[in-house]
Image (cartoon, rainbow, N blue to C red):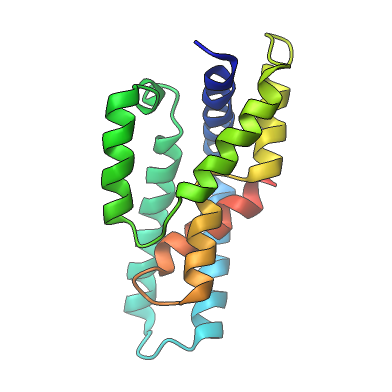
Length: 167
């Protein structure tokens, strides 16, 4: 396995550990950011019942994102054929395009890969997170900010929440 792939796996594992450990903070931050965004956008007809439904969706997305970084499932991310098919399908289903962000992530990981060893792996993964954030948050945030909408709101709130918590 190449050093870049080892570092990418460590990146996902460190993200998983941080987010799993900070899940109560994520929950509180979701509530804070959702209330602020609903107020800022002035979404019409956003009563208490609708707010609770969107908050529940955001919390489900938090769980989904944490599991996406789970080391147990990472082996599927790095199976080239499965990963390519899954990535292509994801691009068709998602409202945001994360290809450029993924390329930056891989390029940045490659630039650090020469320094990978057992002692430096976790530190390099943490540096990678600080430099590029949690994939695909930047794509989600940019897509929402370019054209806000209720359909995009849960993804956006989760992306913003994760970026604030991992910093």
